[in-house]
Image (cartoon, rainbow, N blue to C red; front, side):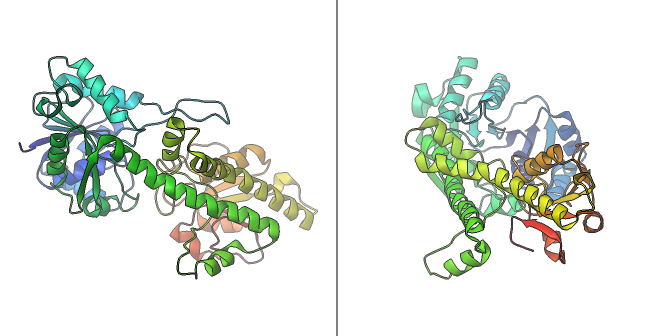
Length: 419
């Protein structure tokens, strides 16, 4: 059965590029989002996020009539759910518990328009078992249809999990080129999912079961988190021992079987800073290294903030005619990684906000990828302004524009080692 109409639920950093790629292959695509601004923007042929090359693809798809955005789901042959999976609120020190309310809401939203022969794929990064939970929500909402958990291969509706595995800033290319892990609740579910993704995916579609597919994405990002935690812990140790961590890592990496990552101010984004908790929350007694790595990386911003406090104190000691209120701190970068506009789970943003809340003087932010940050106590300025106005320079995100900055005899806190 071919897929003539495809619906993508959630038009964010993953959903919109995915919808655009299907539309670019002349498939009719209905994008669904609760954000009216996003819907209106897309229907004008524009985009509400920053992602290279995506604007041209969306404009062409909308202009040619292959892509439209709506706020209420419509009938389709395949539904891809790409909504957020946040955590429930918890006290400091407690293990965060995944919050599946957006997946549940998306499931219940598409349920009324489901029909026999449809395919539903969960793309949202999720804890193990989420795809089965989604199937139960759908079955409860549509008792007139049969689902894989009850009817196996003979089910009216097929269900699978296929996690996104793309890098922000390279999403368009990686959606096409990267291999996809596809985990159906049955063999037929997997086969139909492969058929759908092969519409535009040139990479290999590797088939497994839903639980393994869910765990694969979590494992990939947890592995990165553990590696980053080692580098971040090493930077703290080297600071205490008066060793240049950047030189140390460069020397260690000359070993043919060693590849230590670069330390930073913490770990951010919607994947690496989040996904390990899905594993820890399910298996708290077993996930010891993963849990420890999360604590190391979550604690790094506090260490950076303390370094900034020390830099302010050193500046005042060197300039006894000035008061703390007269000291201006410039924070370079707010996004969670270089050369994108995504502020989600960004340690750089949290560090900047914390400095602004505790420092009595001015705090400047330099973020070339956003036009506004909506924070009254932080002034968004250009690089040139910061070089003139700031006394303390804090490197948080190594955007390409910052690599050209020259700071002579300045008070610097460089968490990325580019200065």
